[in-house]
Each structure stands twice: as structure tokens, then as C-alpha cells.
Image (spheres, rainbow, N blue to C red):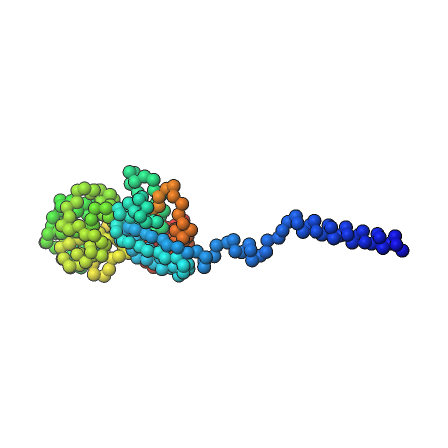
Amino acid sequence: MKKIITIALAAVLCLALFAGCSSTKEPETSPSAAASAVPTEEALSGTVSANGSTSMEKVIAALSEAFMAKYPDVTVTYDATGSGAGITAATDGTADIGLASRNLKAEETGLDATVIAIDGIAIVINKANTVTDLTLEQIAGLAKGEITNWKDVGGPDSPVVFVGREAGSGTRDGFESIVGVAEDCKYEQELTSTGAIIAAVASNENAFGYASLSAVKETVTKIKVAGVECTEATVLDGSYKLQRNFNIITKQGTQPSAAVKAFIEYAKSTDAASIIEKAGAIYPAK
């Protein structure tokens, strides 16, 4: 009997030792601890400062509003200063991201451009003007002052008044480079915003200018270029030639904050497609 009890006690001790050794090898991670390691929408916080293109104002405002609704502890700010200023802000670090409604130039090194939308550059005239269609060559002639009367392109017998954006504007850079009139334009006025261009053309029967498709209002007439109307569909399929990219500009070699990185990824995502399109721009096909 004593022998049986001794054997039983030995067996119990062995089982206890085995269980103790097993429990120290692989400590389990609780489901709640694992979940806490994954960032949540509520956990993301901080600020995202953006600076740049006035043409991108509607797009960035809409994206910022949606992003802040998704991440309520993040604040996105935007200073509309023009594409050139936005690129400078990204370069010198005074803004987390720059916004440029043009592509980077060869000399603008050390930066990355991320396309988040495509925009058409509409040619706009006063509603009293009877011109409906112009070729790129005619637009170039009007811009350079070689064509000085609207009657020479099928319009009324009146002088041409050309208004455009200030130097450094992405819209101006896009217009001049596509039409081939860089440094040759004869501007009557150089204005600092897309809205100012539209207002100037609306108030002068002889004026014409260029503006972001997303900003064109019923106060002016948007004319065809080489027979093609400026619409979202013709910009996306490439048949309308006056178009440019909307870019987020970041500095190479820097580590963005979690909030900045999340905002850029959100702006690129398919979740942003309907937001960009409602703002009047075109979500690029991925």
C-alpha cells in the first residue's frame, strides 16, 4: 500500500513540474494587448500643415474635412499661397506638405511629387463674346499679342484683353508650357488667384483668361479648344490638351509624422475618389 501511494505522489509531482515548465516557455499575448498595438482612428493625433496652389483649394478643403471627420484628433491647415510658394514651403520645412498644380521642374530637386488629382485648364471669355472654339495656335496668338482683335478669330470687332495669373502660379505655368508661350505672354493684368481671373473676365466684355476647371462659374463662358470641350471626361481621356496634375509635394530624406503620412495615403486612396470628384477635379486612374 505504501508503495502504491509513493508511486501516485511521484506521478502527481511530475505532472506539476511539466505544467510549470510548459507555462514559462511561450507566454501568450492576450487579444486586448495585440489589438492595442494596432493604431486606431481614435489614436491618431497631431497636425498637418499644407501650403500652396490656390487652384487646389476646393480639393484640399474637401479632403481635409473628410480626413478630420475620420480622425477627429488631427487638425489639417491650408495656406493658399500659390504653387511656387508651396514648393518652397516643402523645401524649407515651413509646411509639412506643399501643394502644386504643376509638375516639379528639373531644378526643383530633393522633392517628391504625389499626384492626387488631374485638372483641366479652361479657357474662359466674357459671356458677351461670341467665340466658341479656338485652336492652340489661335490661343497662343491672342496670348502673345499677335492677334489683337476678336474679329480675327470669329468674334466681335473689339480689342483683346488678356488676363492671367502671377509668376509662380501652377495654372500659369501649365497654360504657358502647354500652349508654348512661356515668357512671351502680353498680360493686361496678372492676378493672384483663380477667382480673381474669373471675376476680371466676367466684368470685361473684351477679356479672356485661363482658370482651373473646378473653379469655372456660370459668370463666364468656357470655350472649346481644337473642337474639344473642357470636361472631366475629356481631361481624363486625354482629348482635351490643356490639363495638369494636382500634386502633394514632400521633401526627400525626411520622416513625416504619422498624421502627415496618413493624410497623404488617404488623399491617394480610392476612398478619396468621390471627394475629389465632388470638388470638381478628376481622380486619376490607378
